[in-house]
Image (cartoon, rainbow, N blue to C red; front, side, top):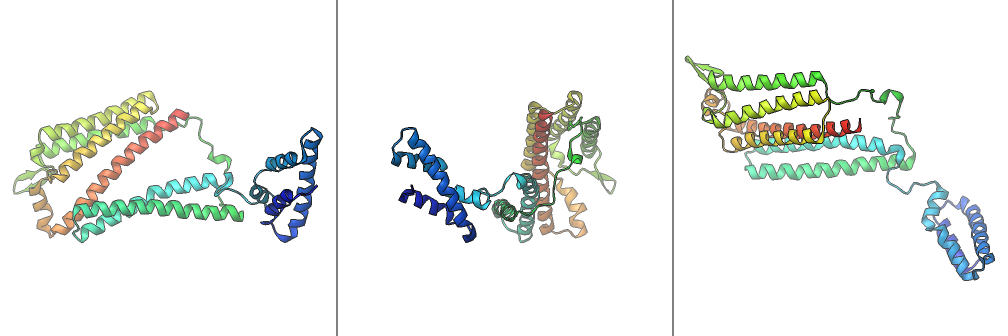
Length: 317
């Protein structure tokens, strides 16, 4: 039995196949459909209902076509998925950040308003994310369709060590040392100063920040050291510790950007003597200001992400 409905199904299936394979697939499908239909008729179904049920059970003809042609019905399959994800993550860390920094510095050099600098940087950053995601996916889609290998085959050397925790005593000691150096530098700057002019030492940070703002900075540095010690004693990160790390990073970013926005962070007398007296003009100072802002935001965001990444990895271990 080969009705119009069966013929339509067979034609829809073989239409996307190479001509040389169409007749073989037609014969195979015809036999398959007839056997399934006759089996249902033997169980008491009427011929029309049996045929429709048999064709419905076979499913979408396009899926059968892909199976006969050995074509994937996905953009990226399991063979290339991990390589695609690793490369995409790496590029999304690097390309948008470089694009944002480059545009921000370029806009600062042409003395664009701060709103324009921020707006252009955000727009370029979003565009970079879209383009990186699109083109990396297109490349891996082509690799998937052509059966090309990426050259990143897994091997035993990639297995993690048995003790793969993300923290160590050396990390904690380094964090405490850096925090101590930071506290010492801030106190030395405020009490003694770094620039010696005619017997007078000038602090780099605005002396009007003492004591309230400076004490706040010292408190953040001290809490960073305490956090490092707690992580070392626990020998692993946790969501709670990652949350504390996030709060400290946000507080430091708010502290620094608030004072920069008010032009109250750096001692103006220090800038005049150390930079302007050596020929550094206002345009260069503006560029340095933008670079400092980008650096503060970048370091703080990376610190937040790194804390949560370590907490996730330690949770797996």
